Length: 223
Image 1 (cartoon, rainbow, N blue to C red):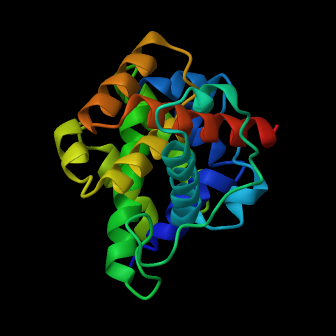
Image 2: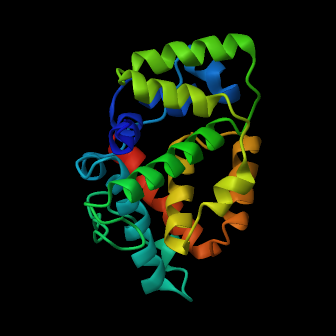
Image 3: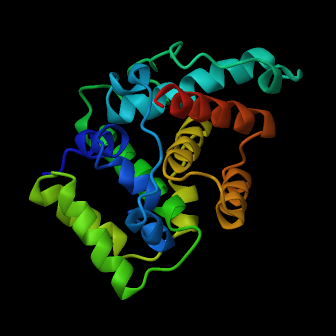
């Protein structure tokens, strides 16, 4: 059985997994080969664990958004990456810790969001596929997790299904956070994909700013 929290955590924390965001999927495989990678998350997020780390980023951004609605504070105020609020267990941001099925479901949604974002600026050819599968093997995952990841990588990106999996505005925010974590947003295709995703998820523009600020602060903190 796949531990989705561990699988997601490996993407966010390990040095090998940071290569995922730099090219484990789709057209970004060439970046992986050339050594490009996204910075790891700051320790304040990582110590929370995989699903909880994404939840904390979304939850903290959501709180700032709620406090700053109707103002330009989201753009003006600096985000402190160490000031993360863990989402309450059993909330819309974080399933109850005892509900393994709900946690696994959310974890899979977030992994799919990362894969979709990382594939946003290219297509998957045979050479890239081989590099990707080698990268998957280097993550040190158990065979069940590796098989699940290879299976997910083999499917075309289904944005409709991804958007439909956002059962609440809170999960929508987490999907967007996971997508941001999967890429360095430095191509027009990536920016276009994220803009489309935010619109499809019906995320308010000010909340999008807060979500992006949270991720950018974490990446800078991890340098």
